[in-house]
Image 1 (cartoon, rainbow, N blue to C red):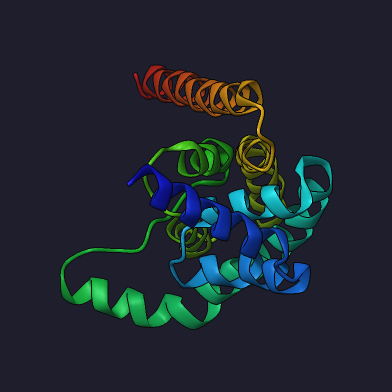
Image 2 (tube, rainbow, N blue to C red):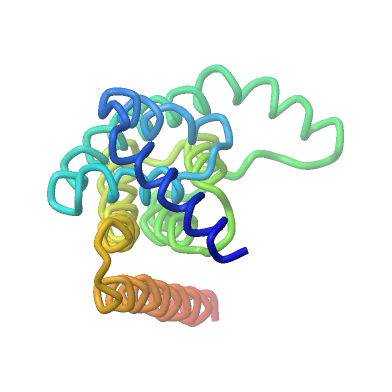
Length: 192
């Protein structure tokens, strides 16, 4: 069984290591818009391109993804979804300008919702585009660094690199959780 797993792993590494970077770019730019999880793509890019090059690569792809997702949510999807929700007694989210930064941060750092749900929610809420893009890029690039580092570590036989990358992923998750709790506590204090 272990031999089979080792063989599958070596085939996977071989395929990803030789993957066309243009296809990887298109994959990370567009597939998450349709529900594809971004994290396996980030790991694959880390394996193929490494962390430093991967950061530039994914940053450019995320710009396309975030702009396209925001635009699609505000224009194409907003009216049909709004009508569908109204028939069920619900409404699309509306956020006051003063609360936009906290809303964007909470949507982006809350664990669980896939990238496309986060992007579409922010587009549906019609948050300020510049603020949306800035905070989305900053937060997602922190996650990206951790996943790319993990991917790059898998490309090397050194166990310490993988352990360090997993530690980085856990560290990012803990930092995001602390930030989320702080934002929620701050919001609760403002409501009182």
